[in-house]
Length: 309
Image (cartoon, rainbow, N blue to C red; front, side, top):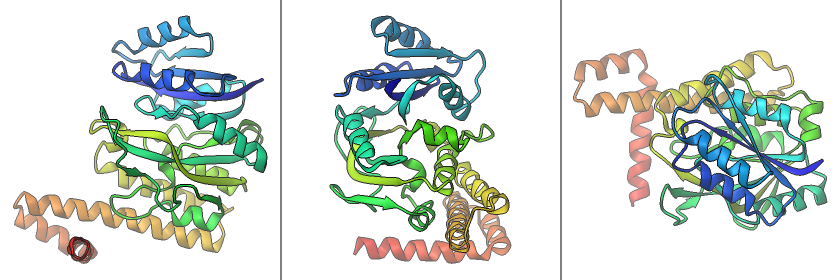
């Protein structure tokens, strides 16, 4: 078997897919495969992927005939991979050179099922580190993730990232034994739901505070695609609350709070847009229907002013 399989879903990523693949091939661990699933791209992505596969046999291209979304692309990759360990890379992101070696070494030492690192947030085209995406775990720290920590951090507040932003390394055997897969109904939030399934299956889960994954922000990326992100995430949480009997009372409390926070933030953004547009009637109508959104707006305004000093 291969030591590590890296899954890269790709759709119209000709400007950066080559860099993403190269960042995997340049890892300090050589025993790996890069499964690149092209989700029916209409640009030059397929040509680049094919060229990389011709140059290095570790690149395994899969070309889908119709666009099915990132969840479906990842599920296809899981049926083809041969790795003992499996991790993810978005087509517009990068690995630092020693990422896989460090994660695998830690996972094997701790007999872990899931290990993730932090993410270095950067603007696309700029190599400057802006911040760690998940500051709850400081650089150099190691945290054992229990159910309480996971569900408390599904939603961490406005303009912050939750557990779903992370890109863990998984023990392939654990995922297959528990029949965990991506829910193809969702094109946003599918990662969060997958990780939730891992924690509900009692995965031995760790977070390393070091930033070994480069998360490059692009305005047009799917995860920055608009207000429906928050309602979709809230819908996923609501479905889990309604259907998953493995949730404890504490799990449910934290997940309900996270769902409520997502919806509050969504309604606040809607209200803020109406105010900026000068739509007084629309603003008033929204407040009448959802008075809590005005309370949330006041809280956000006060917090912003306090942060400014």
